[in-house]
Length: 135
Image (cartoon, rainbow, N blue to C red):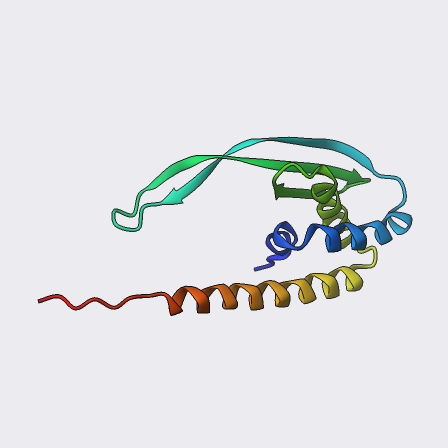
């Protein structure tokens, strides 16, 4: 399973924008199909009952672009249309095989950084866990 979009959705916005900027000359002319921000429902799962519910709404930015038959898509949390467009540019470059090796290397490096950050958070959470004894 390819988790490229999941990685791009979480990567540092400044790094993503900087990398995507380098792809623009190689991609050439693209068509912007959609670039917008809006609220989407945040689904959650009740772990006790196993049922899904909506926790509330969250602000998201979305971009959808096309070059010929290839399309790129980006959706990121918050109101940062440039970051969602950068995500769509990387997605399009991979789909169109334009500097796809560079894109994969960028995504792999960012996935490793995100994994280390996630592990750090989990370690800090585990350190606060309290074990209770019941009679």
